[in-house]
Length: 115
Length: 112
Image (tube, rainbow over all chains, first blue to last red; front, side, top):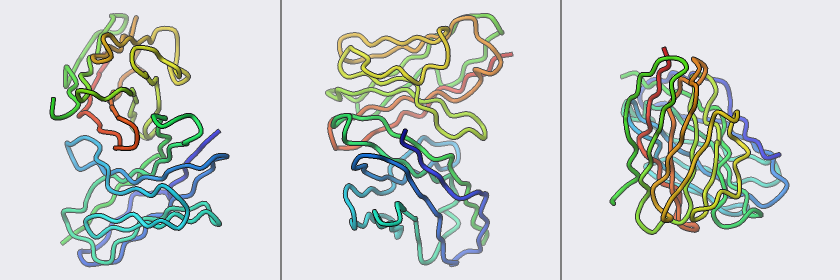
């Protein structure tokens, strides 16, 4: 079945450091890929998405490119801020099961940014 | 409503009791999903509704778990004879096609 693998955490960075969070996936169809973020004490929010190969999703300075050849969707940000401290989840949704199909999540990774 | 609403936000129950968790999706969203978030386990899919029917209930962990949706709107997740391993945050999400999934803030269930 479909699966998402995220790099092990937690990750601690200093403010203004470069961030990369790795995500790879396994899917037999044509998945859409997502990054969700969960800030402390809040619910899950969509950060960015990409629906086909070579698409780049971007939001709030974060970017991720859908790489079909490496089955990856790594999240990057050039300069992190303390306010980026949160849990980040990579996820996929397989279009084969219809437009309203379930999300399959990775285990999430906790990012802490220190001033 | 403006967002997905879940109630209660927190629930503490004794082992062996039944609990009901409620989800109010965004008005007009045809799809509704339940997930469970456990420490160290990430997000686990439980069940998906399209309208009032549940084409995918493959994630329900045991027959103690059930869910229904009425009027294509409100959904209730019921856990019977709760066990300590049921302690988790239960998340609901709704969607309409490719406009994305919107999650509620969750119900934190603690079984003591």
